[in-house]
Amino acid sequence: MTIIDISMPITIDMPVYKNRDEKRPSIELVRDFTSGSVYESRLSIELHTGTHIDAPLHMIEGGEDITVYPIARSVSPCRVLDLTNIEDGITKEDLVNKEIVAGEFVLLKTRNSWHDEFNPDFIYLEESGAKYLVEKGIIGAGIDSLGIERSQADHGTHKSLLGNGIMILEGLRLKHVQEGIYMLIAAPLNIPGVEASPVRAFLMDRGTFNL
Ligand SMILES: [Zn+2]
Image 1 (tube, rainbow, N blue to C red):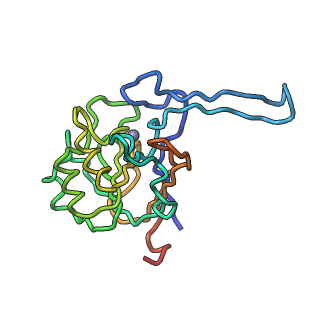
Image 2 (cartoon, protein in one colour):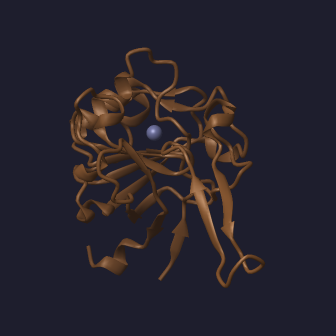
């Protein structure tokens, strides 16, 4: 059985959106063996830092929080698309020749996976690409950038996906992943009322699941 980790490590100097300091996590030592008999830490992290899932509430006023996703949605048939030839936004035209099957979670592998630092010109999914994925009946869309869209004042990409029940998974690391089909496992923390959650995301052979 092969397990491929596609998550970002959470560290103080990890890449964060637009390099904003307030988006950096902090890991604080609460007590250790010099002050007691246990070692305990506190993590403070913005919910969109690192590998995470967005819920509708992130972009839609009155939208559902992260608990809208039942635990069963944490395990999905998945297809990784190699889009490393694209230099800007991923459009419908870039996707029409790809095999995309209804009911799959689609992961967009781009040249973002080659950047270990935040790149302000990151590759993103254009609204035409998002609408095409909605038409195809996918269940989720993931990308190897900290945002699935860039410079869209109306957040058309997020709204097209989230407004149609499509889960968004951001902050993936896909450099070491080949185009193909897998099972995706990515479970948000159960935090009622919030709009996103960090996840540990990984891929497994679909054959392991007899699907
Ligand atoms: Zn997000």
